[in-house]
Length: 329
Image 1 (tube, rainbow, N blue to C red):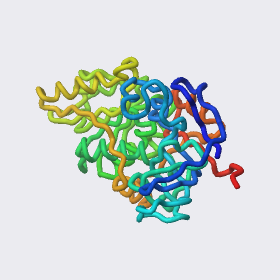
Image 2 (tube, one colour):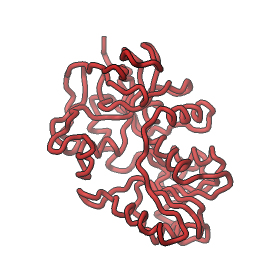
Image 3 (tube, helix red, strand yellow):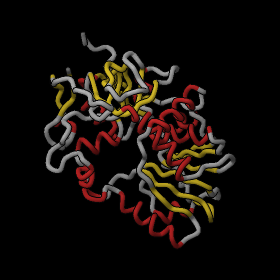
Image 4 (cartoon, rainbow, N blue to C red):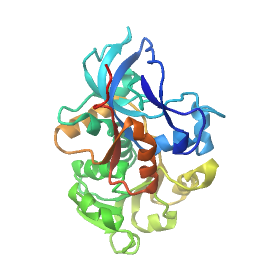
């Protein structure tokens, strides 16, 4: 099968399209014929091996343990292990399969869900990681409630476009923060108000927010707290910069420490990859409350270009990889 592989950590230049053996499933796994895959910051981190602690999480210290990259996936079940009960060959699924930039990928049964009936494979392929991050940040850690004023920083990105829609689905009044060229897109997905950070500082206005979801931002804790109500909640997810060791997590650590001494709740989290939340996202999507936003779609052979486009920071929503028009037998 064809796959995007690399033998070392590094920039997109280390990626190559090669022919490799089709993976063999275990008893609790599903073999998925990949129709599409998602591109996100998680892929960049796995590709580069940065920050360094990611290598301790099972990806390999000096060299990658799995040469194939990619996580988000949508496709059709080809084969199931003997312990698998949720799926059978022919089922259309979406979810997480490590090594999804390939014609086939093995995935655990509990990290897949039936594909939403109203989505294409490309749309479904970008849902799992970003959608669950947004859902868990708002629902589980932010405790979002109807009528709250919610600020989404990074509203135009992969997680942000899901967060805006999910917060609206929970009945919140949503303000999104993004750059000038993305204001109309964020408004179009349901944001009640949009702040162009190039023209306005969200922390300087009179509005105070019950919940702030900061997605990969770089605002100081002082500015973020200034925009919160006295008992408001700040949830930081992701973060860039901060060097090869911390990778932006130093701000999250400071938030957790400071939270013990102030009335505001300041926290962070690592999203949990699970079947149950994929079903929640599926239901929201099929109910018309959430629709994935895809900026660009690339063929498998152009994965390096897709990742470079993501690195440039211009993407509105998600970027997808498609294999639907390939020449597989």
